[in-house]
Image (cartoon, rainbow, N blue to C red; front, side):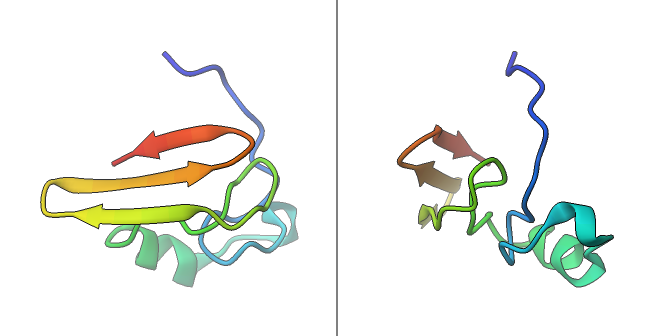
Length: 65
């Protein structure tokens, strides 16, 4: 189980999550992997595979979907 982390940044556009809802980002995230780390706003290395995706932040590690 992953520890609860406060997401400060939108993981799709990289803008502040506190600025309000991101409906276009939420709709796109249903089909796409994240592009930015929600914890530090770094651009992540993303790899899309036929069975899913992986996104790697150099600071916070890998997430899969």
